[in-house]
Image 1 (tube, rainbow, N blue to C red):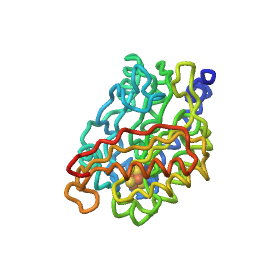
Image 2 (cartoon, helix red, strand yellow; image 1 turned 90 degrees about the vertical axis):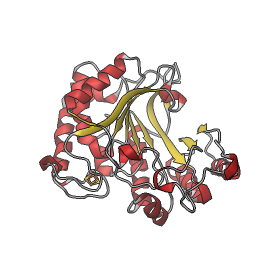
Image 3 (tube, helix red, strand yellow; image 1 turned 135 degrees about the vertical axis):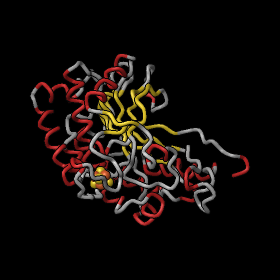
Image 4 (tube, rainbow, N blue to C red; image 1 turned 45 degrees about the vertical axis):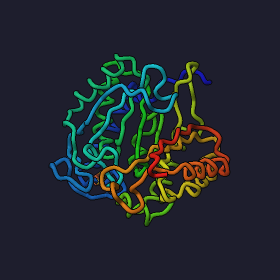
Length: 315
Ligand code: SF4
């Protein structure tokens, strides 16, 4: 347990630095290079790139979420702001109407700030930006307004981990807790299953930058709630397609063996994975057990595991 740490964006706002970040981030939209795809489209003029995100943030939902990791959801829930569109094309995406079809509604920075303040008022322990990469400028603008109006809870950046280091630098001191995925250790598999280009190098560079900003230790308050740090999530895929041993070994060797890992067993075939030759079934018990053994072998002792949900006919 540690002492209570004031969210970093409050000090940045008081120092007037948050506004400079918003300005710098907005400029990146003129030739968008927010994520590693660097499409170069002018989103200020309404052009869209690979992710299809425009000038205004599109928001699928802003709700209390009780099912994140315990230090995130606590007793009163995490205030998730679920952003529409995505920089990936995962065949197995469980949220594809939001990520691929853009379900949601456009919100101004003021409206987003109102949503965050509402979640704080509802008692949420934090604000949890889900799939935020392609909206960093819009989120910064909303945080500036919300901070002015009294937002005081920590900010989480809940990402696929396909982030550009330059964009992450805009978030230094703003984001208190990073929740990145580390999905793959093989670029070709990442390309085939998720449409990523050079996922591994970008993911690893992003994870290192996040650790530089917030450290490897997950700092908790006296109620066990996360105040600062990072949690790395890894979804175990069937047939070893997520290269779990390699992913975990890299994390232990290059980030820290102290990093908190959320090892997820919740995979089920959704979207274009239904009927797919390798992705078309849930995880087998022995596949998750192998993933747990890899976690142990890598020496990663902190974090959470899931109960495996098996379909009998799959086993
Ligand atoms: S955020 Fe979207 S438009 Fe910008 S570089 Fe990435 S995919 Fe392209």
